[in-house]
Length: 210
Image 1 (cartoon, helix red, strand yellow):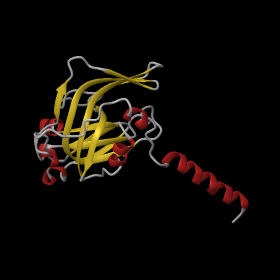
Image 2 (tube, one colour; image 1 turned 180 degrees about the vertical axis):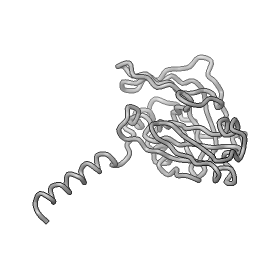
Image 3 (spheres, helix red, strand yellow; image 1 turned 135 degrees about the vertical axis):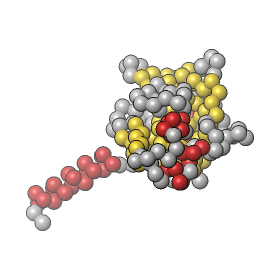
């Protein structure tokens, strides 16, 4: 092997590592000191039901590093993982390195999910089907792409265990995020929307993968 070829292989390996290296959540430790941890789940949280959302009348604001987190609602769910996408380089990667496409109710059933082609890219969740196994509105209302901000290193470790077809419980807050330089990220607060702006942005205080 020539020196030039060896050097090229080394550069390729370095580039691969920089692009596909370990996931990181640099704000997780600081967030763990700022957010109230709510680890228990309400009794009515079930994979057979929609997420439980309780809007906050006077949304508090948490300030961590250069970010302001406006807590919009307490949010809990149990769901099937339909897909996962990791992010290391986009504008939101330091906040939410993992996106999960999640399904509940009919969208957690194998006989339904197996008839739908599901993918994720660019912070979106896409689905298509030759024939709808359930009504189109039911697919939209019972599934969503969710951007997950781990509120502690422990939560981050648990989220990294999530894979397609696993089951997960999440608790946390729907949030809007503003950065000092003017960059912002907004959460949906509805399960019936679709398209741009329809994803939930969750500050996750508890996660269970099983």
